[in-house]
Image (tube, rainbow, N blue to C red; front, top):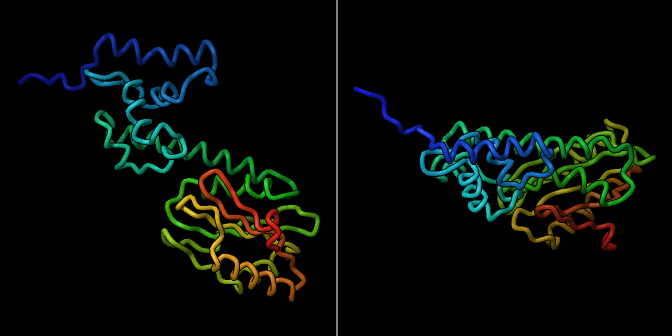
Length: 233
C-alpha cells in the first residue's frame, strides 16, 4: 500500500532548480554557466541532489569539456546517478541541435576563400566522432560551394576513400575544384604517409579531368591541418 517517495524533491533542491531559469529570464542565456544551462535541460533534481548538482556530475564525466560531452553516448550519460534514459535523450537532442546549427552556419557560406572557411564546414561534421569519416567539398570555379558529400565512414584507425567515386561526383556536379577532408579521432593532426599518398593520387587524377584539388584538411577535435597551408599541394 502507499506510494513511495523516491521522486520526492526537497524544497531546497526545488529552489536551486528554479534559479537557472530565473537567471535566464532576467539576464539571458549568455549569462548562464554550462552547468546552469545543463540543469535547465535536466529540469529537476532528486531528493539528495539538485539539477545543478547533477549537471556538474555530468560535466565531470566529460572532463568539464562541452566537446567531450558531445561524444558521450546515452549509456555513458546514464552513468550519472539521477540521469535516466529520458534525461539522457533530452541532453543528447540539445547537443545535436547545437551541432546542426554550427553545420548550417558553415554551409551558408557563399564562397570558400581559404582553409579556415573549409574548416568551419568540416569541423562540426567530424569533431564529435569516434571513428574516421571522409568528406569532399565540391566547388565551382569561383569558389562557391556546390555540395558537401560524405564519401566513406570507417573505423577508429582509418577509412577508405575511392578516388573514382570522388571524381565521378565532381563530373556529375560540374565542379571545377574539390577539397578533401577527413578526421583523426586520436587527436593527432599529423598526416600519415597513406594520407599523403591518397592526396597525390587524387590530385593527379583530378588534374587529368581539369579539376583542381585545392586542399586536404585533417580534423582533430576543433583543430585542423591544411595540406595547402603547409605547402604539401
